[in-house]
Amino acid sequence: MTAKEFLGMAWEIEKRIDRKTEERDRPRGGQYDWTDTAAKVADIDRVICEEISDLCRIKREVNEAIDAVEDVRYRRVLELRYRNYYTWEKIAEELGYDLRYVYRLHGKGLLCVKIPAR
Image (tube, rainbow, N blue to C red; front, side, top):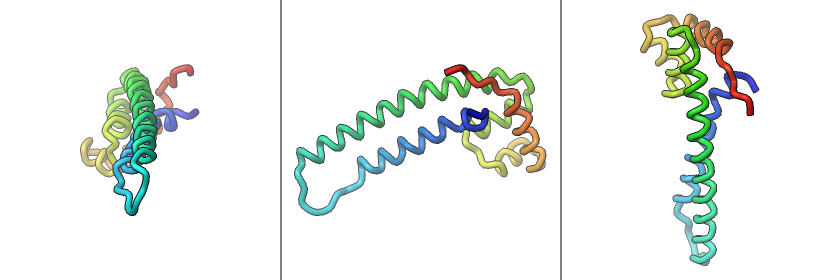
């Protein structure tokens, strides 16, 4: 697994949770068995709870990995991208850097990330 894949795991899990939540909350048309529907909702809720547990663990690991990056510029770019989910343009604007410089800092920051053993 690359550092970029590792740091992006929390975002992927959050997207899965959002999709499951939308699936659970989506109105269903027509006639159906309420018992069956309640069981499906309960199954989806169980999956969402498992995903949230995974998300908390991954976020903790990601935060620790980002916090361990010594260079403050690299760390700040990684924080904005992987904690705040900022776009590249928003990161450049926030930091007052050229977009190409943000990409360069990001690449160098990724090289400093230590992926925890699994």
